[in-house]
Image 1 (cartoon, rainbow, N blue to C red):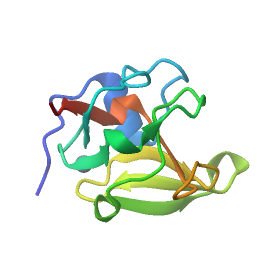
Image 2: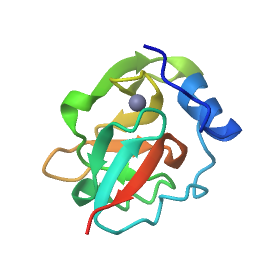
Image 3: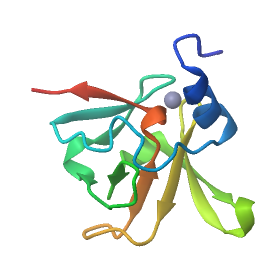
Length: 123
Ligand SMILES: [Zn+2]
């Protein structure tokens, strides 16, 4: 089934469909600290929970865990580096990368573009 992308901005298309990266410290969700869910900006699947968000000082929203069954990983060897790309399993949109330098308990750092996410407040 084709998922509508009409609601996305030019920047969101670039990041989610063409593996783009927003400039560090530019994302609207970087400093979001409220309780809620982070959903895929393209298909609205819930991908991250605010309880796993932390400040990694990388300039991108970071999580030490994801809602595992909603995320797909793929080896990305572009830019002369080997990284693990993370994608939305439901619609294959690019989210960011996961690195093994996160805090306990997982040791993972899911580094995600704000442009790939939509925040939903849960009060
Ligand atoms: Zn999606």
